[in-house]
Length: 166
Image 1 (cartoon, helix red, strand yellow):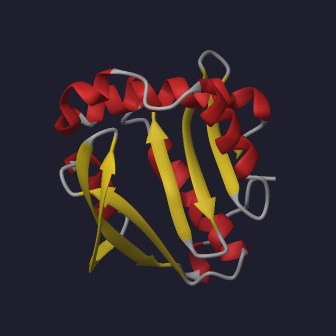
Image 2 (tube, rainbow, N blue to C red):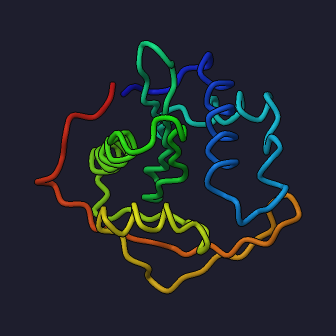
């Protein structure tokens, strides 16, 4: 686990597209094509310099296998994705823990995120990790498809802190 560097941007984009194709079937054909341009992935990495954080999980054989983006100034975990070929190996849990650690280090006592209400896999993962809906909903349009995202929150306990990625 480490902070993303500029050279990770395209791998992050490819991973995102693979995860969306696999898990966002509720978007129909929209999920089958790339969501963002290579330049947008470069910008995402550049925009997540400290105090924000973009963390990647890597392995020697496959490079970037997961990532999460955190906005400590507001307490938000903005993104979390694991490549489908690496799902079920604890990478998502490790990314969640790393995101929580970044937020704790910033003095946050609560984390929030938004996830699409039809994303059953993500909802199950977040529920198992202690996230609960707080009743807020965000509705938007994503490449022409309507999204309805639930806001989930979780208290962060100091006793659960781990070492924050450098």
